[in-house]
Image (cartoon, rainbow, N blue to C red):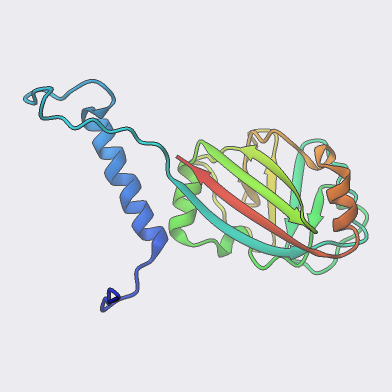
Length: 190
């Protein structure tokens, strides 16, 4: 069996971004059921876009001071410690902040109508669903915030979320409080 060798490394996010724009151009050109002028119906291909999902993962850990009692936000910080005032924080010591996301991922996040964030600790997981926004700057260097509202600031990675930290499964929060590793998968759906 032979392997394909290329003279350069392929960036999967860049490839996906190009695919996204290609599909977007195709859809805008008539594939939504409105054929362009000058094309007969028998030459237009039937295309059904099932979906495109772009994912990234962040690694953090829990902390004994995690309360997860905030009614409108969920926070994750790169800081290794926290205080009792941080009632939205669910994980510390995260290996990424919004500033650290790849440029292509940020572009997708801003365009995504459905953003799923899955928190996993000790085999217990919780999914939060929100959306991206063109107004997201994604340039904070220490914290990520998921918001129920549509408020945007440099920390915000998703708006209009269906859950805040108070809504998270208490079994998950109890595991996080022990200081165990926390995975945060961010999935962008198109």
